[in-house]
Image (cartoon, rainbow, N blue to C red; front, side):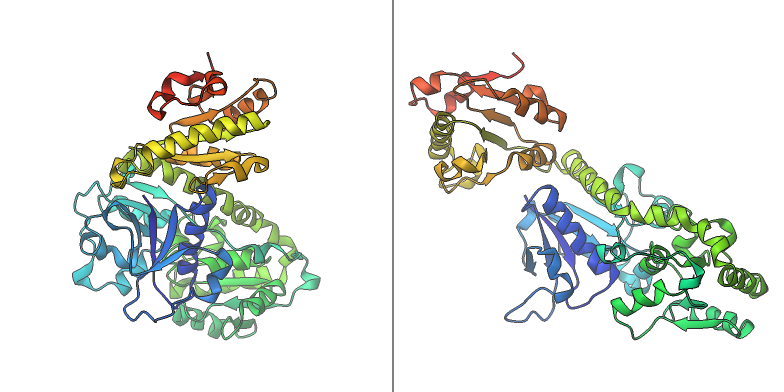
Length: 452
């Protein structure tokens, strides 16, 4: 079974990048399990991944996927596809925004929110999670999977010193411009700078040398630009629309959030002027926000791990197959034993004409010294990858062929510490060294549980 993350083609936005980040992280935790699925009405003959996302090195497909056994993750702008194109598949809707859903989706294609416990929902923000709960989606169907800023934002030294910053107040003219223009008219003495017609590098440089960033837009999800400005050392002032109204999404002090009311304009401009003129005094008020942003990648990785558990419980993802890990460490005898076992398994179960008859899937977790001895049909991966597969795809266990138990117990200890159930670890009995004509179906009688 494979996970396909559906994605619009030929555009570069924060939401599209998040889709690519998810596929990258899914494959990092369990390689080969996920692909980007570009849904393109006008596919080109020679289709390539957009250059902005080549850094993730994600596998991708265009318009084609693995059929009804595939798990489909849809961005919220395509919720209608859950009950049309992908009605035969397990579906997860990823709410990267709320407001954009209503702005980009025709009314006749709005998600019905009818009781359908087969569809799961991921949320990028607390704002989205709250929206779903109010729409009648149960909490057990909701999983938070947020996002994170790229490494580019954490490579430069960030000065938190007014002597190294200009008296700039930055804003995004694509969001909340009507209200922002009222602020500009009220305080024309401030050095207002719109962030537009700039490369990402130019935006970062501008933020590094500025003191304040404001955002009185609609905050359809947990927006990236306020976080980018904060991590670059700007003080942040926002409205309360959308996700900005949730401390969990924009964790700044309440005194820096305002309603977009005409009556509040004097107080807002007074706050901005105070932050500009007394930057050294108030920049520490945003220390928690910066630390919050710095931990987002780790939280994302943990959320993706939780996604695997949800898939297993809700869709039996990765279950129904006896997947066996065979670890080869130490000696030539160990390698020979593993090879014999693998060949028996392969010959008996992996050469069936009907793939549905496969009883075993085998992965060989092998010391690189012995990789060449393993049949080419069997994936050879490192022991660390076994743990990821074990934890995310419900492997039956790990088999360790040994001519001697000496030197194996540090490996066993490490496996258990990483989360492998001790009852799923087996040694092969010495009979394998004396006779190798056992049929694969007899394997269970040849294994010795480690814990015994």
